[in-house]
Length: 218
Ligand code: MG
Figure 1 (spheres, rainbow, N blue to C red):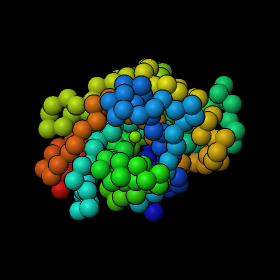
Figure 2 (cartoon, helix red, strand yellow; figure 1 turned 45 degrees about the vertical axis):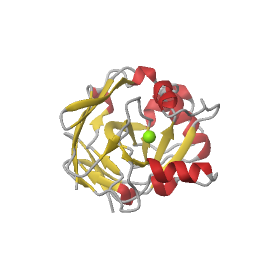
Figure 3 (tube, rainbow, N blue to C red; figure 1 turned 135 degrees about the vertical axis):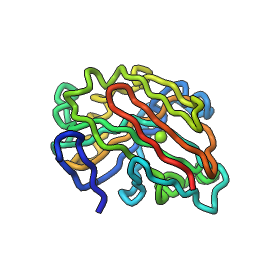
Figure 4 (cartoon, helix red, strand yellow; figure 1 turned 90 degrees about the horizontal axis):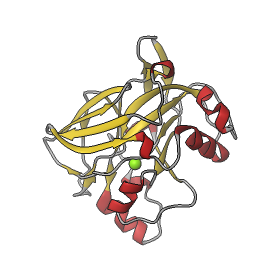
């Protein structure tokens, strides 16, 4: 069973659902040539996809195009369903960093056939995840900088202010489809700059006020 920790509190949560938003940053939608969605694009990763800070990514042999996507992660601390925007943050226990690793070649093939692309997103090691920072320590989750470096070079440099849906709106929308439970994690989408990673790469994510995440590719 995978667990996540809230820094400085010793509080631990067994991980439930990992719910991910696609297409939440306009510049990333444009770089992939996707349509702007009316409704949030939502998919899930299994908890077995998690690796901790310092872990190692294994790119499956059936893909030759694994992309990094740095994302702000929300840890749900209090259960809720159909949560109003004004109360959304009361359900969050902390903020963390996640990589939503994506097998872009397999995803493109499945998308073209109109099939679900979960297997391009949920493979083992596809969700490097940091420890969580208590919610009180982040002033405004809708205005923080996200930077991802590969081998010391900046590839993604965005700000959560560029999200089409705010953290509160994401929680409201997701909770219309799924009951949120303590230990659930929401990945809020990625800014532009996604690119291919390969064996030996060192990835280093930083999110302002939240923390950092370092992983490498086997
Ligand atoms: Mg993503």
